[in-house]
Length: 329
Ligand SMILES: C[S@@+](CC[C@H](N)C(=O)[O-])C[C@H]1O[C@@H](n2cnc3c(N)ncnc32)[C@H](O)[C@@H]1O
Image (cartoon, rainbow, N blue to C red; front, top):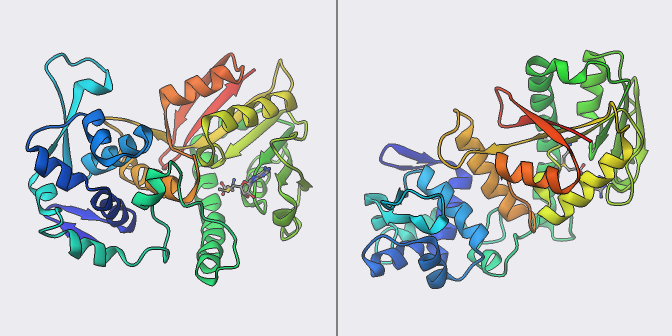
């Protein structure tokens, strides 16, 4: 934890600030000596616009920079500009930048976006490799997935039980070792569960009452069921690949009574509830741990679902980082 005045940054935050320093954002603003639009910043630091927008969203929401409208108040990104704060003025190379870089630790020893990854247009992509330091991280990530599934599924059961009424068969696509579908089948015993994942993941899964483990690849086909759940799946993938996955899910469900239940974060550009800080931090983690993944706003979700051929969807917010989107063919 690094404290800046009233703001306290967790580990993701420190790494996002480190990335901003490596990109030269505080120095660029200091040299410019006035507010800058996103495209002015882009021209200076040279990384993809989407990634820079997400880093600046995180940093402004954490009080490092300030985001303001110009007088026209249009929603065009160029009508916003970013300006310095007392904190960002401290983060130039000749002031506290070296201190933050030391706090964030050496590259390659943790998950975190680097300026190099961002400039090349992709995250570092946490993978199961032969590199022992990456393998330790991978094992921690697997353990974290089990904990996450329990917490998120409990929130769904408590705040969104109606979503599961009338479902006879539910397939959890990318359900890992089946924690979520096991809990759902127990809470809603009229459901027959299918846990669907890659062969190496299913090989490690234990038997669960009411759940069948099925091996497969969601980019090829998804087992037929009344409903498909995608929890913490789509935020790992680019828009194009999400549309492919959603189309495969749509093929798996009946056109009249079927639905796809998406459990993922919904970003809010300006407001948001008390979980928004965690969502912003999660977006930084996703940016560094996946190649093209991202947390999406409600507009971005609507666009994906529309292109994938869904006719309508509803959104239910939970007391959690995630919300539940129910999408209908
Ligand atoms: C981030 S985890 C989410 C796990 C679980 N749904 C949760 O919320 O905790 C992503 C899961 O998707 C699985 N997955 C990745 N690619 C897949 C594919 N092509 N087909 C099926 N599952 C896949 C991974 O093995 C992993 O279990």
